[in-house]
Amino acid sequence: MEAAVSDAVDQLLRFGPPIVLVVTAAWLALATWRTSASIGSRPYGFGRSLRQRIARLLFAGSIVGAALALVAYARGATIPSLHPIAGEASMVRLAGLVLAVGGQVLTLFAQGGMGRRWRVGVPETAPDALVTTGLFGLCRNPVFLGMLAMAAGLAVAVPSPAMIVCAVAFWIACEIQVRDEERFLQHSFGPAYVAYRSAVRRWI
Image 1 (tube, rainbow, N blue to C red):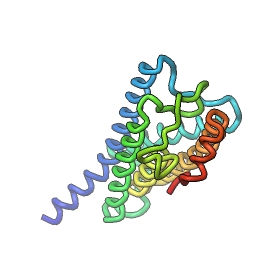
Image 2: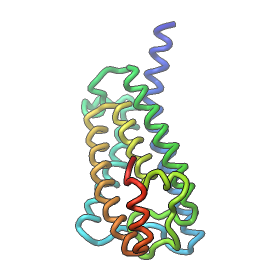
Image 3: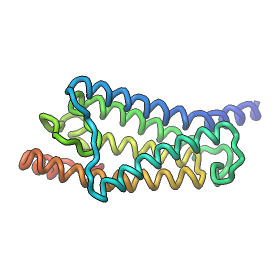
C-alpha cells in the first residue's frame, strides 16, 4: 500500500507540472485570440527599448525552457540538470504543485476579469478604460501575481536547476514588464491611474 501511494505521488509530480503549464499557456493563447477578435486588433505588443527586448526574451526563454524541462523530466530524461535536487517525492514538492495550481486559477480568473480590456505587454494603443474592480481592486497585477505563483510552485514541485533558472528568469521579466506597463498606463490614463496606483498595491 505504501509503495503504491509513493508511486502515485511520483507520477503526480512528474506529469502534474507540465499539464499545469500547458493548460495555462493554451488558455492564455485562446484568451489573446478572443480579445483580438473582439477589439479588431492585436492585444499584445512589446516596445522597442532594450528593456522590452530583454523582457520579451526572458519571458519566451523561461516559458519554453520550463515546458521543455518539465516534459523531458516527465518522459524520464537522464540529464542531471532536469532532475530535482531535493528528493523524489515529498510534502514540500506536493505543496509546490498546489501553489502552482493556485497560481493557475488566479491567473485565469484575473485574466477573465479583464474581458476585452485584456492586454499583453505594452500595446500600441491602450484599452478604453482601466480595470480597477474585482481582483484588480486588491492588487494592480493579479495576472502577473498568479503567473509568478505558478512559476515558483512549479520550481518547488520540480526543484531542478533548469526549473529554478526558468523561475528566476520569469520573475526578472515580470519585474521589468510591470514597471514598463505602469509607465504606459500612467501616460495613457494620467490622474486616474495615479489615483489607482496610490490606492492599490502593486503586488500584495
